[in-house]
Structure formats: C-alpha cells, structure tokens
Image (spheres, each protein chain N blue to C red):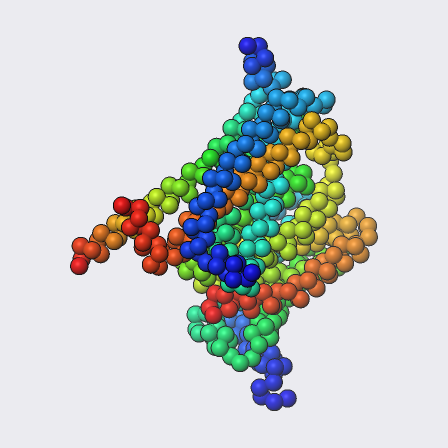
Length: 57
Length: 247
Length: 227
C-alpha cells in the first residue's frame, strides 16, 4: 500500500494540498445542504401559519 | 418564440421546470468531478519545479474562473431584470451571489495554501490575489445590500444596479491593481501561469472547470427555487405547494 | 429664461443645496476635521520622522481624503429623504437627471473644495516634497468629483436603509480603489521627479466615465428605491 501512502503524502506537500481539497468540498457541499434546509424550514413555517389561520377560523 | 421565454420567465413555471433539471445537472457535475480529480490527482505527473503542490491548481483555478463568471452572470441577470422586468432573473441574481462569494473565498484560500509552499508566505499582495480580494468585497457588499432592503423586489432591482456598477468597474479595478503591482514589484516575481502547460496537466484542469460550471448551474437553480418561494410566498400556487407537501 | 426651463431648474436646485449647506456650516466642518484627525492618527502611528513620513505622505493624505469624502456622502440625499423634498424631486415634471446633477455639483463644491485647500496644508505638514504639492492638488481636483459621482449612485441606493452609513462605506470603497491607486502613483512620481501625464490622463478618463454614467445611474437608483 505504499503507493496509497505516497499519494496521501503528496511529495511532502500534504498539509497544503489536502486542506485545499477538503475545504473546497466542504464549501461545495454546504452550498447544497443549506438551501435545501432553508426550503424545508420555509414550508414548515408556512404549514404552521396555515394551521394557525385555520384554528382562528 | 418570445411567449416561450415569457412563460418560463414566470416564477411558477420556472419552479416546476427547474425541479427536473437539478438532478441531471448535478449528475453531470459529479461525473466530471470524478473524471477531473482522477486525472488531476492520479494521472497528471508532478510538476518539475513545484512537485506535488501544483495539484492545488485543480481547485484553485476553476474557483477563480467561476468567481468572475458568476459575477458576470449576476450582472447580466440584473440587467435583464431591470430592462425586461423578468422575475426569475431577480431570483437567479440573488441566488448567484453566495455562490460567487464562496468561489472567491475558495480561490483566495486555496491560493494562499498554494502560495505558502511556492513563495514561502501565506499571503502575498500579488495582482491577481488582490483583485480576487476586492471581488470578494464586491460580492459581500451586494449581499449586504440585499439583506438591508426589506422589500425583495426593490432589493433585487437595487442589487441589479449595484452589480452593473460593479461589472463596469471590475476591469478598471483589475487593470489598476495590476498596474499598481508592477509599480511595487519586489524581488519575487510570481509565475502563476506557466506559458506552456502539458496536456496531461491541462485536460484535468478543463474538466474541473466544466465540473464547477455544472455545479454552479445545478446549485443556482436549487437556490433560485428557494428565492422564488420567498418572493411569491403570498401567492396561491405556493399555498397549494404546502398542501401537497403536507399530504 | 422662463421660470420652468430645465436650466433654470438646474440652477435653482444648485442654489438651494448650496444655501442649505452654507447655512449648516458646522456640518461642513466635520469631514474637514476628520481629514486632519486621520492624518494625525497616521503620523502618531508612524512616528514624526521626516524620512518615513515623506515616503508615505501621498498615501496617507489620499486615504484620509477618501475616508473624509465617504463620510460626507450622507448629506447628499439623507436630509431630502427626511423632509420630503426627495419625493418632490421624484414627482417633478423636470428630468431627475438634471436635479441629481445639480445636487452632485453642489455637494462637491461644499465638501471637496475645503478638502483640497486643507490638503495643501496637510501636505506640508507631512513633509510632502515641493514638487509633489501641485500634483497632489491636481489629483484631488480630478479625483474628488469621481468620489462625489460614484458616491451619489451608491448613496441613492442606500439612503434611508438600516445601517446605511457603514453599508455605504462598505459598498463604495472597493470602487474607489482605481482613483486611489492612480492618484497616489501620480503624487509619488511627482515627488521623485518623474513624469505624471499618463496617470493624470487615466484619472481624467475615470472622471469622464463617471460624469457620463453616474447621473443616469443615480436617477435610476432613486427611481428603484422610491418609485
């Protein structure tokens, strides 16, 4: 498995290369998750508002 | 033909139509990402001068390209919104800003991580990085203006004007910063772009650039859908959507 | 000249804004004092030695002038919004662009002219070389109208918003960067005895671009915000 090790080692530059990639993927994934969460929150808030209006009637 | 555009310029139809597109665009993005990363991380040979650290290029350069591309898209959507009053353009512009800011931030952060092994410092005021920093300010300013104005329609139109002012200024700012940098040229000359780049290194870069483009396309639609919901929250069709989601 | 001709309206608005500004003279002093204070801050931070100060003098003066100018932008539309004149301008049958241009010119006369005079004294205080003093004033003459013009666009976009003061500053400073870079380069070159025509032409070009586009953008911004 030494080729895997040398791959991860990145010729000694591992502490620069891997954080760069990890950071990129974190940002890309967050940009997908956060809007989806907000859409869910939006509908939940709307549903609650509807329930309150129906109760008021 | 124009009725076609007007129909899909309507928020409701856009909301329905985009639902189909997002997974396909996301799927293509994923395939391109896998192709680009294997090409860049596994198959491209290490650089003569920089060794393995050059591999950061595969996320740094596409991020920088996207940061500029997205601003232009944002400004164009703003112009369309101002001239033709297309509501979907408002949503696309507002949705693009956080993505543009994210890519600008990534360009700066990965640039810094690349700079440390290359030039020995975490930050250097080279012309391109300084321009990227200013671009980040422009994105953040746009987002700040959007949140400061309560009425979403006014906010969108104000943002459109701001992004148009920005897009006119970006070439001027970039030229000024480059010129400023040549004035203050220190002992280190930055060699960020090699004049000739070997195809085995270039092809994964281009694939990654396309991957990021498809990512942007998929995610901007995703975000724009949310913006449209917020814009149209008092309308009947949104009301009906909540019915559907509940049941 | 009839009472309602466009030029008469232009002069009327110009005269109005100048009168109002001159009546509240204390308001005009604030950016001026701020200018002096910021330069003093820099000197306190850098030390009083002529050799250091001479090198950073153009930069210090220009950054201070930039900040002072940004602070003074509030007075352009804020009080008009408060007392309802802005609404009257928007409803007026006369072109909004003309009204806005008159306001910008008045603003520049009230805020930049004192700054330019002050820069003369401040330049001497920070040991700016003799050869650079007139170029400094020239760059301010060319640059401050750009600040007023671009500031008017963004001031119109942000007037009356929550936190508009700092928001305006945040939005506008990136756009001022080219003026800053080229102005300081001009003064630096003049201090070293080098040619400055290229840089001055660039500043002139930015002025022309702003004069052409900013009034229209300002009027559009006011319409977007207030109909």
